[in-house]
Length: 151
Image (cartoon, rainbow, N blue to C red; front, side):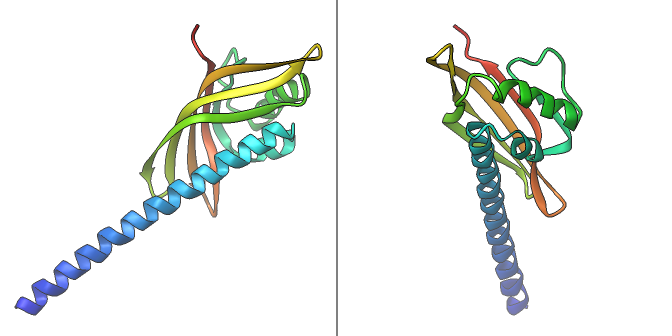
């Protein structure tokens, strides 16, 4: 009987360790996707940044006046945002993340979006939230929201 309970306890410990490892892997993969997003933004790579979003993503950019729910509208948003005021940049200056499940991670933070307007560099501080979820074998942005930092 003691053996049975010892085996059961070992199985429980291994199960918890496995879940902890899966959560760490999910967080790492989600943060890598956010890094890819920032690199695509800085490169003004409209195709690259659009492909990081799930086809059914909910999107609310700084300049959005409606909730964007179609891939072609996300693409249009970035065509307008990234093809002007180049070179562009986006950097998370502070961030926190929360593993919601093995297949979903919330990343929120403060960011600095930069560019050049009329020959003069500018930086706009903001607040940003991503929900990254596993869709098939890939991680995708399923929700994005950015707003300007209040004055």
